[in-house]
Image (cartoon, rainbow over all chains, first blue to last red; front, side, top):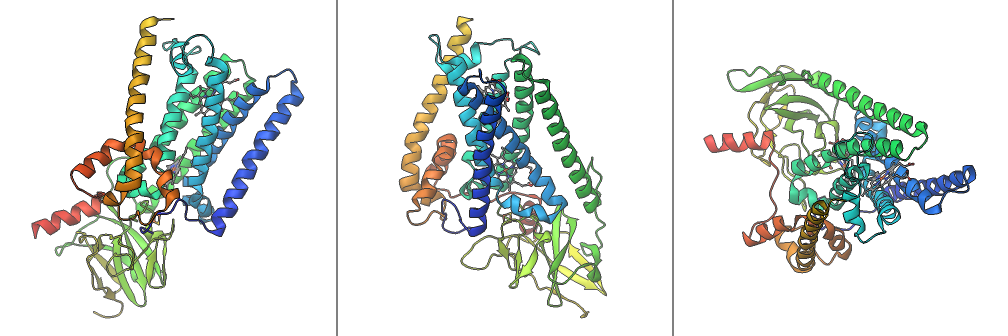
Amino acid sequence: MGVAYKAVQWNRQKFVYDIILLTTVVFYLFFFEGISLHFSSDLDIKGIWIRAFGSAAFILLHVILSIGPLSRLSPKFLPLLYNRRHMGVTMFILALLHARDALAWYHDFGNLEPIVSLFVSNTHYADFIRFPFEALGGVALVILFLMAATSHDFWLTNLTAPVWKALHMGVYLAYGLLVGHVVLGALETNTHPLLTLAVGVGFVWIVGIHLITALREAQKDGAPLFGPPAQPKVDADGFVHVGSVQDIPENRAKIAVVAGERVAIFKYEGKISAISNVCQHQNGPLGEGKIVDGCITCPWHGYQYLPESGISPPPFTEKIPTFNVKLQGDQILVSAKPNLPGTPVVPAVIGQV
Amino acid sequence: MDSTAISVVEWVINLVRAYAIAGLIFALLFVTFLVKRVDSGAQGWAIGFRILIIPGVVTFWPMFAVRLLRGKGHPTEKNAHRLAAKQSAGAS
Ligand code: HEM
Ligand code: HEM
Ligand code: FES
C-alpha cells in the first residue's frame, strides 16, 4: 500500500501471469510470421513484422478493454484485473515497435524526417477512403504512451485517482482511432476483407459487454441509466434508510447511494459501520470486499481500512470519509452527511437500542 | 507536397522536442534529488522505481515544477463524499 515505492511489487502470481503473457505474445508473433510466409513467400519480412506487431497490439487492446466489464460481471476475472497494468505496458511496447517499423518502412526516404513525412505525405484529411489512417494511429499511440508512462502507483497519488482515471478513459478514444486506423488502412492497402470483418466483430463485442455491464450496475444502484440518480429519502434527523441488517452477510457489506456516491455498510462482530465505497488507491469498490483481520479489504488490490475510522492500519496513511450510523430495530440508517476522511465513528451494535 | 504544411509540422515537432529535452533535464534532477519532497512514498534508493517514472515526469514536468516552487506535496483526491464532508465540517 501507500508506503515505499518499488519498481514492481512482485509476487508469485504476478510472475506467473507475466510469463504466460510474454510467452503468448512471442508465440503469436512467430506464428503470424510463419503463416504469412507459408501463404505468400514473396512478402517482405519487414512488412510481415509491421503487421505482426500491429495486430498483436490491437488484439491485446481488446483483451484489456474486456477485463473491466468482465470482472464486474463475474469475480472469476478479478485476477486479470490485477495484471492489466502489465498487459497495458506490453501492448504499448508492441504498438511502438509497429509504429517504428512502419515509419522506417514507409517514410524513411526522400529528404524529410520520417515523423514529418508521416503527417504531410498524405494530406487527404477531408477524404474518407484516402484519409491519412497513419495519423490516426499516431494520435492513438500518444494516448497509449500517456497511459503507460503514468502506470506506476506513484502517478495515482500524484495525479489523484479521479484525474488518473479520466486519463485512462482516453483508452476508449484511442480504441476508436485505432478502429479507424485499421479499417481505413486495410481499405487503402487492399488487405483481405476478413480483416475488416474481424475488426467489426471485435467492436460489437467491446460495445456489447460494456452496455451489459452498465445496465447491470445501474440496476444494482436502482438508478436510471440516463439522467440524475434517484435521491434517497432523508428523515428529519438527516439520516437515510438503507435497508435491513438481514440483507448483509457477516464480514460483508451492502452498497447504497448516499450523498451522491456509493457508501459501503459493513456488518461484522455484531456491529454495523459505514464508510465511503471509494478506495483511495484506484477507486476500487470497497463494499464488494470483505473484512479480513478486522480490516475492510479492497477487492481490487487489497488496500485495508479500519471499519470504525476509515484509516489504513499503520504504517499506512490512507483515509476515507466515514458515516454516522444508527439502528431502528433491524433497519439501518446512515447519515446523509459524510464525516471528514478518517473520522472515528461508534459502530451501531445489533440488538441494542 | 505543400511546403507551408511541412514547415508548420516541422515547427510543431521542434517545439515538442524542446519541451521534452527540458523535461528530461528536469526529470533527471527530480528523480535523483527532489521526488521525496512531493511524495514521501519515495524512500531509499529504489532505483527501478525512479527510472520507471522518468517518461511520465518528462511529460508532466511543469506540474512538479510548480508544486516544488510552492513547496507543496501531492494533493488528495476530490470526490462527492470528500467534498460534502469538508462542506459540512466547515458549516458546523
Ligand atoms: C499501464 C498501466 C495501467 C494500469 C495500472 C491500469 C489499471 C487500470 C485501472 C485500475 C483502471 C480503473 C478501473 C475501472 O474503473 O474499472 C483503469 C482504467 C482503464 N484502463 Fe488501465 N491500466 C493501465 C494501462 C492501461 C493501458 C495501456 C490500457 C489500454 C491500452 C488500459 C486500459 C484501461 C481501460 C479500458 C480502462 C477503463 C475501463 C475499465 O476497464 O474499467 N490501461 N486502468
Ligand atoms: C505512428 C503510429 C502508427 C503508424 C505510422 C502506423 C502505420 C501503419 C501502417 C503503414 C499500416 C498498414 C500496414 C500494411 O498493411 O502493410 C498499419 C496497419 C495496422 N496498424 Fe498501425 N500504425 C501506427 C500506430 C498503430 C497503433 C498504435 C496500433 C495498435 C495498437 C496499430 C495497429 C495496426 C493494425 C492492427 C494494423 C493492421 C495490420 C494488418 O494489416 O494486419 N497501429 N499501421
Ligand atoms: S483500488 Fe486498488 S486497492 Fe482499492
